[in-house]
Length: 258
Image (tube, rainbow, N blue to C red; front, side):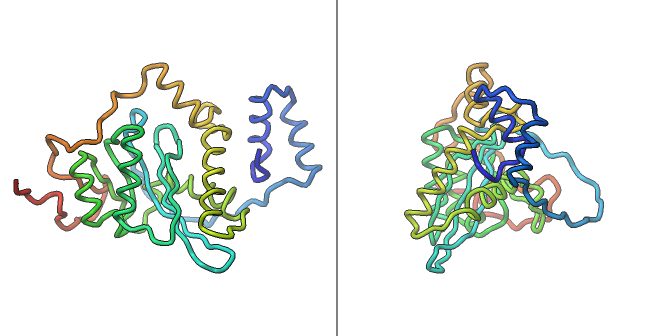
């Protein structure tokens, strides 16, 4: 259990462990122990028309990627590449380093493709690591469609933004990192806890790994796509969000020789 979990979450976790207790009793003990979390004040935003996003139909259909920044005790900064499966909410990888280039991003994604399956879509922001030539060529070769959100609209990548907030609240803000190796070890430990122990209300209060296993048993996972070059690609790998500004031509939309 984690001390940043609220009373409802702790009640669900205790139920999963076989502890029979009324939620009101858990809430009373929670308050008596002074564990209540301070609520963050949300800024009021202007209302606007929201367009429903296409939901991924199965595991390994849509992955979301993003970066999180933090620092070591000696003041050095580092970055963490986070990768999640939007359907199962499972965190597939958190790559930690002081320099995460497009080449390193593609190596992480290639490793995940070989361990799991090649996704249909990878959703990201417009960072240079994701829009660069290296990422474009890798996506074209594997038959992956890159979907970029509109600049300044992180809500279009809501699943990874929600995950990153939990990563910061439950891990980065709670830990002191002595070195990069120490940061990798502690963050990986938190990732395993997130996948195996933390129930999600959107998954019927199952953990991501339990939900993935239930989908596989029910036959809800599509046939795995191998990590080999695609035979056909509709108009290239790069695609933007449903409502987007016009983007310049990318490498993948150019004709290839040979």
